Image (cartoon, rainbow, N blue to C red):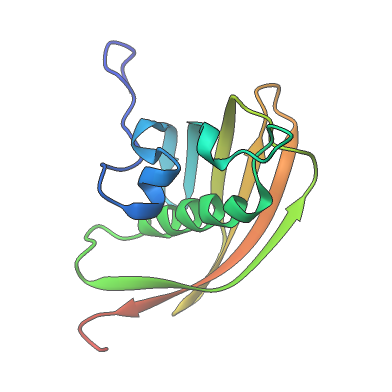
Amino acid sequence: MSSQYPPPIFMRPGHCAGDLLEAPDWKIIREAEGFIDIDAHVPVQVLNPRQQLFGGFTGTYVDMVALYTIRTLFPARDDYWITTINMRIDYLDPVLGPRMRLQGELINKGRSTSLVSVTFLDEDGNKLVYALVTLRVIDKRQA
């Protein structure tokens, strides 16, 4: 990716969860097959009274990053659906922001289910959240 161009954004406006988390402002640092690295921020509307990411919103971040990670495996988005069938989140340290890194990595790809890890890192590279997500890919042509 050339430094003369801005990095690509994670998603366009118009997705209810994405708009709440202000995902159109996230920047993709690196994307490869089965991997995504995102520079994101913590919007004020998802903070708890201690000015930390409210734990209930963590799963929304995890789900969005895991889904995007699986999408890196497929050239076209019109042929399949992805559904989350399990999610485990370990809260290691509070997410304070204002910025964080979100990394999604394919751990295992099966015929219809895949395991993805999602890691939240602070600006110094410290792990804040670690999640494992099991997703199922459903071929629309066979559904």
